[in-house]
Structure formats: C-alpha cells, structure tokens
Length: 313
Ligand SMILES: [Mg+2]
Image (cartoon, rainbow, N blue to C red):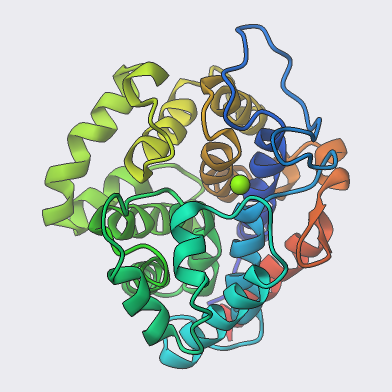
C-alpha cells in the first residue's frame, strides 16, 4: 500500500509518541503529583532516569520494532523467536525497572518464543499486568495492510509474557486502534474494535464507558492492564485541547492521574502519536529522548517509517 505524507507522519509518531509518554512519566512513577504540577521530562523517579531517558516500556517496544524493521513478519514463529531473543538480550542488561511478571518469565531465558509463552502461561496469581500493553504500539506499524493479522500478532506477542486474556484483548484493541489512527487520523478505532471482537466487547464496552465518564480514582490500580488502558483512554477523551496540542495535554493528564505514570503515558502516547503524527511531539521533548538499545527519538522515527515502508512492499 502507498501511504500519504500525512499517514507517514502518523506512522512516524507511533514509537515517538509512546517514548515521549514513557520518558515524561518516568520521573513521576508510583507518585500522585499534586494538581497544578507542571509536568516535564525531568528524569529522576524511583529508578533515577536521566531527563529524556525512556524506560522498559520503550525498550521492549524497540525489541519488537527492530525485528519488524528487519523485514521479518513478527507474527510468525521466526518473528516471535526473534522478539523473544531481543527480550532476553534486554533482560541480560539487568534493567532496573523490569516488571515483576515480565521478570519472572524472562528469568528463564527461553531460547524460543514457544518456551517463553509456556513459561508465561505457567505463572499463577495475578497475571494481568500492563507490561504487554505498554509495548504493543509497533505491532500496528507492521500490519498497516491487514487489521486481522495485526490483532493476531498483537495477541501472540502479548502472550510471550502475559497469559491473562485481558492483557491479550487489550493489546488487540490498542494495536487495532493505533493502526486505524495511522490510516484514518482518528481515535475511532478503539470503539470500532468492539464491533469486530464481539466476545471481548461485552467485557470492554462498559469499561470504555466508565473511562469516558469517570475519574482516575475509578481506575486507580493502573498497574493492572484494565485500569492502565482506562487511564489512557480517560486522558485522551478528557484532554481539553483540540489539534496537535492534544498530544502533550493528554500525556500530562496521564502523569497527573498518578500511579504507573510512565506506562499509562506510554500507552496513550502510542495512540496519540498515531493520531497526531510525529510533528505533534514538541521538539524539546523529541530531542531529549534516548534509551536502550542506544537509540534516540529520531532513531525511533526512522525505525517506524522503515517498518511502515516494509508494509508497503
Ligand atoms: Mg516503565
């Protein structure tokens, strides 16, 4: 498929938007900033980030994106194996901020995606963390030409570390919506997904309704994938700016909502970047961005555009 210049800008914004939210929220993780706090890319936080440095959310998204950029279909066994291998390579750097559930799975250092998925499925207790939703943005870029393959791959990549059905559904919804936003320039994909995924819709429709009418305290357990998605959607719907400024305002609202701020802002940021494009990310934020694996904000833009170009071939 041939993309217009607007669609290319929106594709370019997917990883950049997610990383911007991630690095913005990193300095406020596990806090509840007071009303009126001026949110900026301050770094710090519990893991002492440098200003502009992104966290595990973007590092894991990059692990997926780099496989897609290599031209491998990320939904195939070959693609999933390569993603699993990148996850283990990242784990081996001993990242400070790895999520509990992801750490439990990657600690086995599986050499195949099938083994990693089995390890994830064998976990007991609370397995619905937000750690697969936070990294799902690049999946949409690899399947701009195929919505069904997009959601199938999103679920398989989620299952590498997160077996909870809600985590898989959230990744399907959000990847579907990001793809739709790149192509159409709207947020309508979130609700459109309910029409194509009927069984899951019965669970998610009232939760989207609640996000639109509620407040962050109604979904404050945002380390859980459901409340994380609701927080991101609440911020997108509630941000009072129209046009590209909506991106920055929404990310600020995610941070002000408190809790797992880097992740709720990264989740929102992937969809915001897809809707408003790389051009909507303030330059001072874009130029500060950096993180594992030794990439910058400009690199994320280049990777995203390459993946979208691959889709077109
Ligand atoms: Mg993080």
